[in-house]
Image 1 (cartoon, rainbow, N blue to C red):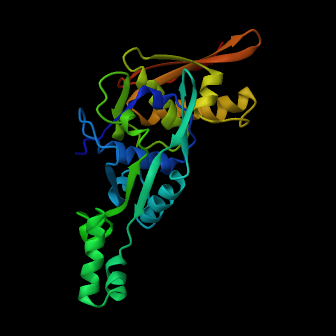
Image 2: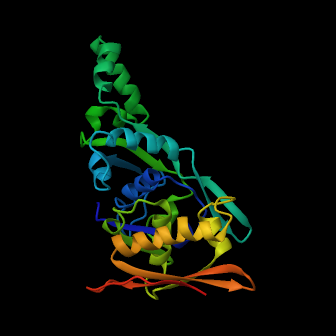
Length: 270
């Protein structure tokens, strides 16, 4: 089912949300499991393993804890999708199950009587909850099970038009959340190798609010950070240009193309 390809509706790319690095990684780990050209049930579960996060360079000593923490935080996060009638806001996830490796032992201690244990299992079976048990995981490497919010699933599965896609391996070395987001934006326009976005729209999609009010800080900590990482760690080389309307910088232009053997990165302002 996993094929390393991340696919999402274009509306997600330019939506407003503010995630940590691990929260973004968690979403990607789920998205790579979605079969292409198939409509999934709204309550389809996705299982996140230690190996999923190890591919991002997470330490083996902390990987399980970082996955669990990311799910706890992401469960509280929302995404804002602009619509003609207004901004639609909903949560990323509807539920999270964090597996406890000692759950089976605890269950036996709680129900030492075999008949009581059987009744408990039958109760779980009646509500389709048997997969909460460690013995019903098909891989001991699994740390958590997540289910996306019903509003977001149609934006992730069986996409036939207006979608963005890229290989998960293209982004595993990124260390800035802004790099992830701007790379997604580039991939939306992969066929042209050109993006022009207003600074206001950029600030909206990254949910910067009052952060980096000075253009110099936005340029240094967001734009240049992302451009440098994409240039160094992805299959693309990219350059940017800032444009003014009057005396104020109002637009960001990004031009990118697949890397050649010899690569130079240029940055300039207008």
